[in-house]
Image 1 (cartoon, rainbow, N blue to C red):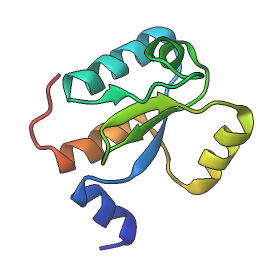
Image 2 (tube, helix red, strand yellow; image 1 turned 135 degrees about the vertical axis):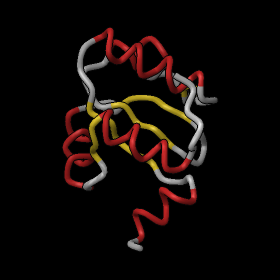
Image 3 (cartoon, rainbow, N blue to C red; image 1 turned 90 degrees about the vertical axis):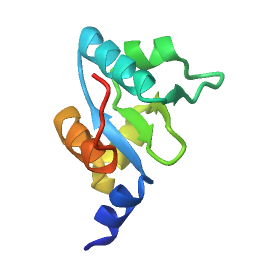
Length: 103
């Protein structure tokens, strides 16, 4: 089992989720919140800015926090990290870690 799958199975790791469209982002945020995630808010990031942002969302499985990438440079770094995934890929990984998913 490679290191990335070990992180997934242990329920840790930070992922960058590519998702566009306000409605789709809001649905995804609601899914995360129903499953115990909270927004990692700070002076430049809030629940609302996460939904409104055009950048990928960040999801930390270990801390159960979500947010969004803040700028183009960070988005490029996320893409280069190999951890930029689609919502469908995230849902598949999340179901492995948490067999009971609240929809």
